[in-house]
Length: 178
Image 1 (cartoon, rainbow, N blue to C red):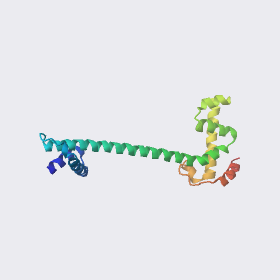
Image 2: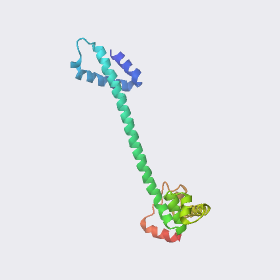
Image 3: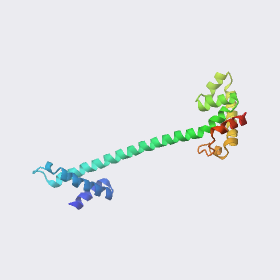
Image 4: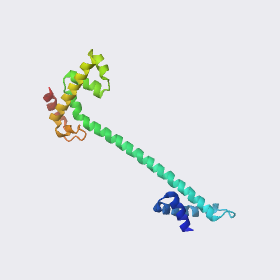
């Protein structure tokens, strides 16, 4: 019956190696539970029931593994993105801090703080048009200063920062922006 059992499993699983593994595990399970076989029951029918349960277990385990892999990947992605964001923002934060106050406030409130341009304009007692112009100039100043300080990594939005400035350099950079 080995060939029939294997054919039964291949039809349901679609993978010859997985079918073979399931069959071997089902043989072990049948040996462990042979006392449950009733005399009035066909041993073949009883074993097919074991095979159906083994197939269900196989798919359940595969789904659990896939879900766990997704969770690990999502967690890994999230931590990678947070790490990247922290890495990328080190130079940007210092550059923003070195801007003149009007530009710094525009970047901090709109780009980093999430305020709308209209809300920022209203808080400043300015028109929305004036706020847009200030934000545009602030962004240009940040870009220009990042190019001076970070060079090539700034052209890639500092996402793979290679300049790795240390704390001793920070004071030098701040004075260069003023």
